[in-house]
Every structure is written in C-alpha cells, then in structure tokens.
Length: 119
Length: 119
Image (cartoon, rainbow over all chains, first blue to last red; front, side, top):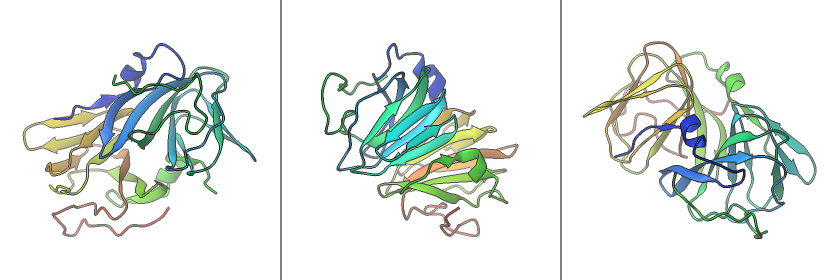
C-alpha cells in the first residue's frame, strides 16, 4: 500500500543536480524529484507533455522564443514536441511528472541522461 | 501556447470547498486545485489512481484502515479501487491530478459531484 511522500525529505536524498529520483507513481506516470543547478541540455519529448512544479528556488525553462521563470508553487507544462532547456542560477528543487519510460534528455541523449532510480 | 500556473493565484478564484477548478493539463490528465473543508464523501475510482498534493493547510485522507495526514509539500496517491474520504479541519488547499473525465465523487455520486470547469 502507498505511503505519503514528503517532497522535502525525498530531496535530501539527492546529491547532485540532474540526477532525478522516483518518489511515486500515478497510473503509468512517474513522480520524480530533481535538483537543478546550471543549464541542462536542450531537448524535447515528441511523445509527451512535461510537468514541472518548483518546490524551492527558482527555475528558468528556456524555450526557443521566450523564458518561463518559475518560483515555488508555480507549474509549467512543456507541450510535447517543444524544445526546452531547464536552468537555475541557484540550486532549485523541482517535482517532475511524466510517463514511465520518459528519458530526461528526450531526443538529445548525451552525458546528462539519467537511469531511472527509486528513492 | 501554455503559460505558467501560479497555484496560489488560481486558488484565490475558488469560492467554496469541494468545487475544483482545472488549471492545466498534462497529456490526458487534468491539473486541478481545490479547497477542502470538512469531510467529503467516501468514494473510490476503479479506473484510476488519485494524486493529492497539499499546498496550504492540512489534509486528512481517511482510508478504511487508517488515516493519511498531509502537510504542505506532501503527496499521497490513492490507488485505484481504494475507498477514501478527504477531510480537513481548517480550510486546506490541494493540487489534484487525475485523468480527464474522472468524476470527483467517483462511484459515490450525489450532491458533491462537481462539473469540470476551467479556472
């Protein structure tokens, strides 16, 4: 049976930026926490939208035509197929929701690709 | 194109408890905010899990065998088919995520059933 998920506690288990951890599931979607610091890689997900909720800090999601700046309690859903690049000046904590099997670097791949892991 | 969603701002648009408002979508899931005060109705969703994240206040989710008590920054996912009854002593603000078309009162129906509406 499920237990409750305390996001702040789960985030203490993360050591480095851009190494997300799975904290739960809703149907075939994974709930992940991640720390963000500095720019990620430009990428897109052709098969899914991508949900970001800021827990602590400030997240900038660069889009090709504008920046979305998110403070705690703010959500942005990147539509499928839209190129984006998450970024943060200071360490920032984020809740991500995407279908199980979604790769963090989308179509870009490369060194920042993370294997799924349960926290 | 999507805009960012400020949960606190959206919650100011709600007048009464248990009248959820849709603030966005991820694929075929709706993102909803709702105010909770007092007990809801016992119900279950046989076709989907049910995601609760507390934004402000304290939410109790009664299950048949125990209570889950959630403070801000805490999530509980009610598994599909599990009877539950949300409750709060003081007005509490919650983010809900469930598939589009999910009825708030699940299998129970009744007066607390809300029509979907966009905020």
